[in-house]
Image (cartoon, rainbow over all chains, first blue to last red):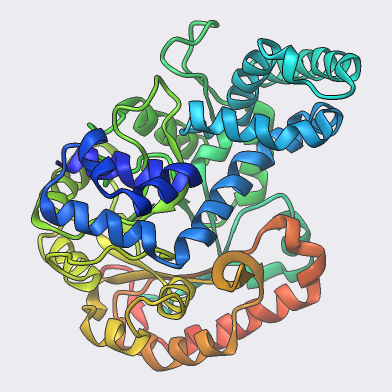
Length: 145
Length: 301
């Protein structure tokens, strides 16, 4: 099915874990999607293509840039806790939003509910998050004015 | 009847005013991504309006564009996605165009940019993804192109993608797919010569084979750009001047494109300092020399 082919193309690019899992167990595609035999072969070839590494890296860069631009202090305050948090966020929300204020607002809400994962300086994260979330809202209001 | 050759221009970014100030008449047209000039808060926006157009920014853009033809280079519609055309986005693009006095034409990408049926308004794929060139996608695109052409009342061009992970076992190749849409009268082609280089270097078709198959009459705009290596793969990062390999292709191929109206250089504003203002102006001068070798046309064709 065209819809499932497109969804699968996006999801194996967004999730390195899913891409590796599909390489190891092609039956996973049948469990998650409704695909023709040809579509399944196309996706398997794509998951195994050497260019997938570059695609996954570009995906992460493109998802990360809006967060760094709008929430720089929060990102820095998360320190070594950032990477697992981002992986979890992108696993949960594999699709982004092209308007960075809206995407960052969603990330802020998601992050606020996971204060137990804020790493070594949770007070700094809390302070940065509050300040940058307010700035984000102000920027959005400015755009709307 | 005035005779014209393809116009030379830039894809607008935050540093475009610097180039315009320095290069004067070298920039004959501007191409803008309309999605950068509206904010889509989604259908459930808390402020009651889905699209916000920042008036002050649009006014500045209007000043920058004054006196020059403007084209739209959009990323917002994801026409190959298996979902209906978002008519709200079409209207937002039109509003930006109306503010600037109207777009000459509108280009979109032959990529999957949105995932059908994704969560709420959050649908971005993160990177442009490949489309399967088959009859099913051809029918879908053909109908959506008909609809958006009718809505915009403008010619639509589709840009060939830069592919890192080409799909295999397709019913037709990209050139056949684009030729079919052109022959159906659904669109023209925005031929990104640098994307051809990216695809060729990453296992896609050879540039020579691609251009030998593509109907040169379909090509109505050309993009030039430069890229770089990422994890051993050459990517379309718009971070450099156009490489010599692409210039050679342009010089050899473009004179055959008798419907070519515009040649546009794309670079990222974040790479502006590295590329350098004088180099960008030099690129524009080189593009003018290229355009002089291309087909000249009257405004009626």
